[in-house]
Image (cartoon, rainbow, N blue to C red):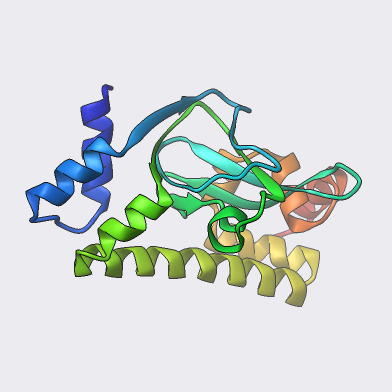
Length: 196
């Protein structure tokens, strides 16, 4: 695919934009980024003020602990939480305490967050869409956290299978175990135990 085709995919994800000047401005400020599996999109301790849209592929958000361990805290695909940014940099003006890496060969479109936020304030449909997507992401994070804290590991695994089955098709067991806060062996044992 070429840049124009990637941009068309982005435009199809957005609400209809009737103002040609907004489309033109957006297109001129977007950058297509191709990543290989394992390649970082947002590096640990970076100051990244971009907003991203996944065109194809998937990403893993890992927190880096004080001991240098990576713990998976979120998943992103082209149809699940596909718009994201570096919250530490954008909202708190701090370097990131996590990294976001490509889970597979992936393509994103990036734009400067400040530019994008100024642009959408001139279009009520885009602003509403942005607000909705932000709420979707925060809802997913909140649900994951609530059920992880409120259920046993076995119940949580069942809940993930019932509501987010695609995670098991796209992401490694190691990342899912880390996300659940358990070991790979424990995840394997739970998978063998659960019935639907």
